[in-house]
Length: 91
Length: 149
Image (cartoon, rainbow over all chains, first blue to last red; front, side, top):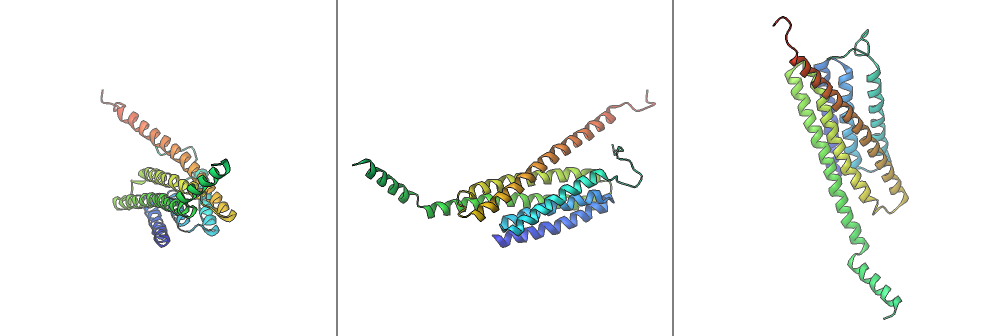
């Protein structure tokens, strides 16, 4: 079971990288691709935590979640393009 | 029969009916089932999201507005899987034999609870944004075209 979950975590990580590349290719904006990658890495971290309950896995999962939160805050603050103000919307 | 003898008999009877080793094994099986369900939900969500992103890549540019919806649904899968894993953590505390294991369980439960909380907030925020976009589109669609009168 542990090996299956570890393999699943690796697959999800690979899927996350490919999905982030797809998101960047379509949107041409790292602010769209980075959250996608971090969501998949979070899913992979949770799968790895289910496979192996150790302090290392716990720290990795916590680190990924913290990076995800910080990246989300950073993307919310930084404008999409240079000179674009934060109040502009895509509606 | 005296009171003390009755207590000894009932304790012996319950120990025979529910030996600790069997109880641990039963709870261990339940924990594995519940945790596997949580992991399966997370994996299915990731596969679904990957398929949607691949489809968006094939369709090309102009599909970036749908990304938030895909991430929202992936977030829902993660939140549901986390609920199952948290249930597994609660069950596991029933058979955790040492303080080290209890400490690890507490750390895992705290991480999963925090992530569940953040995901819940993000899902609510994304849902509000999607509703706002749909409302704006409906207003734009219902507005009469200039010069048509």
